[in-house]
Image 1: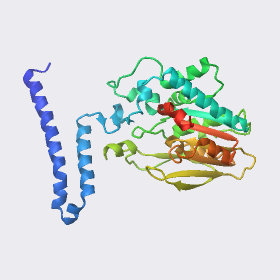
Image 2: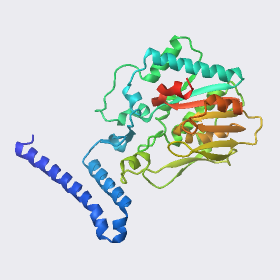
Image 3: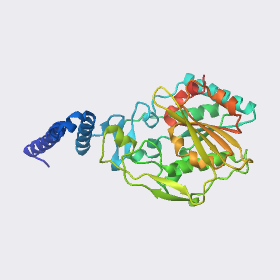
Image 4: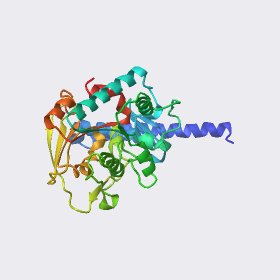
Length: 350
């Protein structure tokens, strides 16, 4: 048991360490200035170094809450941008009015697509903390009861809705026993996670297109790069939290070729991708997606003669139906992260 003097001494030591690190970080811009006129004029780099020093000192002292980021156990970082943790915390629960609006939007989407002979597939992919809750700090509160996605699936079933949702949670929870599926320091899944999702998507489409058959993980080799800061360390300004990204590269030459065009948006230019294979007997696809589908795109493209990939943020002024009428694809895939199911009516124009 610590005596009062020991506790006071320990607290003083930590206070002194924090004060020293903080004051030291404040000196960094002045050291830069002292290095010469170039350092004096290089204000942005001085600011970046200050932020990095301040962030690293907080990480060293065990802080867990940062700008849009929560630090978990074993070096794991989680996005916390206002909605990213909602599914994990099961808030806010969807009201009956919300569920009714979502159901109406989904069933209208299904009717529009099937009326022209196309096959719809709505894919909900789970957030990182849904698959890896064990690294989330215990201090993050969770509401009792079902998650919003659980609510939606139950509501559709109880109301006899024919709309099919591909829920990737079971497949990923099972596959995590064999592969790491999400980057520890990124808000997205890694290529293994994307590959498991790709296999489930192709398997789900197989009854409508019997010639579709997903590749096996043995058809790919892992190519690893050097350790770098991924998206969450970049957000908080850390250079110490690095991770080695990797790719799954096919052992045989890929069949699909891909091009893109950039379109302006309010935030930044977004790319629309177009893929092509020489197999004219393969179906065509139109894919509406978020950033998670970037890792999926090379896998999925192998199975379609033509595919168009439209980022949800790329063309907010053009409805999905307008794009659909333009391309008349055989398959329409609508992918969305779990935390964003509340905006389904908005994305589908309801």
